View 1 (cartoon, rainbow, N blue to C red):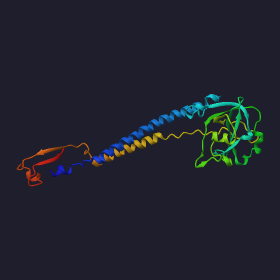
View 2: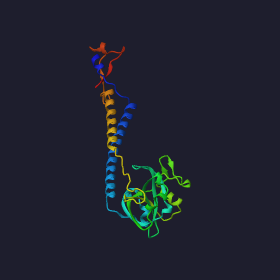
View 3: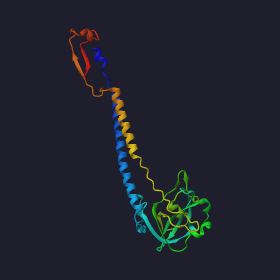
View 4: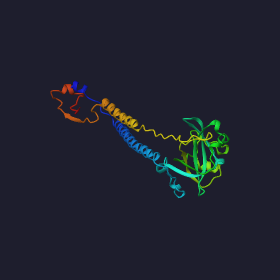
Length: 273
C-alpha cells in the first residue's frame, strides 16, 4: 500500500481548475482573433495596392462627400482640375525621407466653385516662406493627380493644432478650412503625385503607405501561452484532474486490517482509481 500511496497524484481544487480552464480558453480565443485580423489586414493591403496603382479617376462628386470613408475611398488614385489659391496655403509640420520640414496644403478651386485641399508635397524649412518658391506656384488651371486621403482631426502625436498661431501638426481639413475662411470644401485632401518641380516647388509623391502586419506572430504567441499553461497544469497535477475515487470496504478483521487501519474502528478506505 505504501508504493501505491507514493504514486498518487494531487487533484487540483475547483478554485484553481476553473480559472485555468478560463485562461486557456481566453488565450486560444485571442490566437484565433489574431488569425482573423491577419486575414483582414492582408485583404486591406491588397485592396489599397489595387487602388494606388489604378488609373486616376475623378474625385467623388459633392453629393457623395458625406459618404466618403476610409474603408471605401482612402488611397484611391484620383484626378481633379482647378486653380490654386496660393494666398490661402497652409504649412503642416512633417518629417519625411527628405528630412524635416512642411507639407504645403493649398486649396484648389474647381469650376463649380467647390474647393479641394491639395497636399502639393514637402518643402524644407528654408523654403517655408512662399516668396522663396514663387516660380513653383502655377497661376493657371492645372490638373492634379494623387491619392485621396482622409482628414486628420485635432493634431499629431502629443501635439494639438493651434489655428490661432497658425501651427499645424496634422492635415485637419475642417480646421484648416475654418481658419482660412473657406466654404464648400471637400472633407478629404489629396496627396499629389510626384511631378517635375519648378522654382523650388514642393516635392510630391511622398505618401507613405505602411500597414504593420504582425498578427501571425501575435497569434503564435497566444497559442504558445495557452499550451504552456496546459502543459504546466498537467505536469503539476498529472492525471489528477480526471482521477476518480472508489470506496473499498474491508471488514475490521480482514487480513490487511493492521496495515490499512487508521483508527480503532476503521474499516472503509478511499483509494484513487
